[in-house]
Every structure is written in structure tokens, then in C-alpha cells.
Image 1 (cartoon, rainbow, N blue to C red):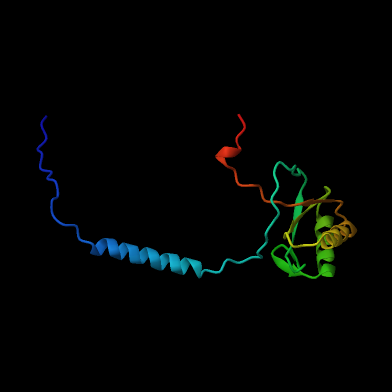
Image 2: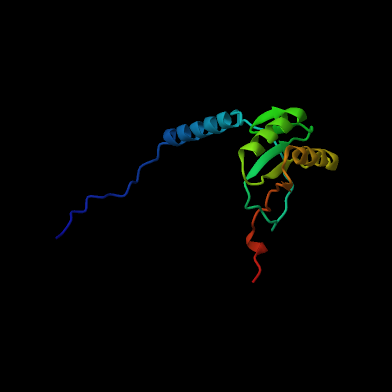
Length: 142
């Protein structure tokens, strides 16, 4: 079976207007994308590799650079945090692990206060959350 060949190579000039329109739309979307508010607390976790995790049920508490506590996406005072942790501990039969998401600027004293507060609430184990280092092809070992 022979197909007819009607395709011709375009030899005219390209119109720049569609390309410029797409470029301007792209610029507008990028500019509007930077204005979008991302909810949450901005934390800079420390970077570490090859740290163990936990297989127990865990609770997360975040501490920002100003030393404020966040539990279940809500700002909490230390007393309020202790009562909420106690309530959660009562609901679980297994022992819970506290995962502390602390900013790099948080002092050791603030971390100690949080772990003591968690111990008073009935949580014995506390782990520090970290960010893993970005993987690079150069990091591979033969």
C-alpha cells in the first residue's frame, strides 16, 4: 500500500507573537507563585546521615528559633504542651517516642527542658529529627 506524500517543509517566517505570549504567561505564573503563602513554621533542621529511627509510635514536637513549642500544628505554652502530651500518653497502650524537630538555633537548655517536660508527661524516649544530606553521584563508594 502506498501512502500519498503531501507533507511540505515550511519555508516561511515564524511568527514570534505566540512565543512571546507563552513567555509572558510563564513570567506571570512564576511571579504569582512567589507570592503564595506557605503555612507552617520555618525550621532549619541540622543535617546528619545514617542515624537510626524508631519503630515505636511517635509524637512530634517542633521548637522554632525563638524557643516556642508547636504540637499538632498549634503554638503551645509549656504547661499546655505537658497536659496535651499526658492526654496522648493515656490513649496509647505502648510507650511513645518523642521526635523533637528543633531549629539549628535552639539551645541545648531548651532541648533539655522539652525532654524533661516529656518525661514528666510519661514519654521516656526522645529523638532529634534531622535532615539527610542531599545525595550526590560523587558520594558513591565503589
